[in-house]
Length: 219
Ligand code: C5P
Image 1 (cartoon, helix red, strand yellow):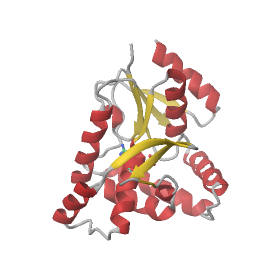
Image 2: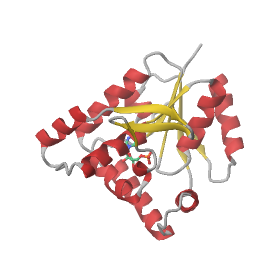
Image 3: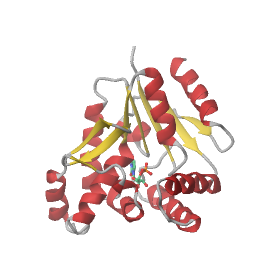
């Protein structure tokens, strides 16, 4: 029997790495909910959508089509038919995404789409509010945490490998800033579900973490 798996936690603590690996092992569909908020942000940036303008935001949301499709390097995020997988990871998007994700119209639209994707079960979705809002009835909920210094180091290595020149300081302050915005709003998306299993992976290898999570999925 297929189940839905929700993986939540702070920025850059390895949610997508774990979620992807679990989906692959279990032959499930992987959905990166953060990529959806990032794609919306990219659209807003490119089309100079005023975040304060309700009508403009609603209108933009109507024009946005986000899909995930398999490309040569794995699943890629498509915004209105174009692959935006690398653009949505750029700093200009990272530094705008939390304010965009804080707009309730944006959240409602994304949550609706995410719930649709989970209707037939067999989905591993990672994000901030998956276990609490998107799939409150997910059979397995994991809340990942890791030391901020370790998270910044991982993100730095990842961005450097992609040729980015972002500094460690810049990355760390962006992470902390996003954590702050994501967890301090009144209707904060980043909350730990009461029935979530917490995994602190500061000192875990990717394999160790995967093994632990698969045991939870099978139990
Ligand atoms: O997961 P990732 O770090 O790529 O997400 C980017 C941003 O999108 C987060 O910092 C957060 O502001 C927002 N987000 C959200 N709810 C989710 C996933 C991401 O608000 N479920």
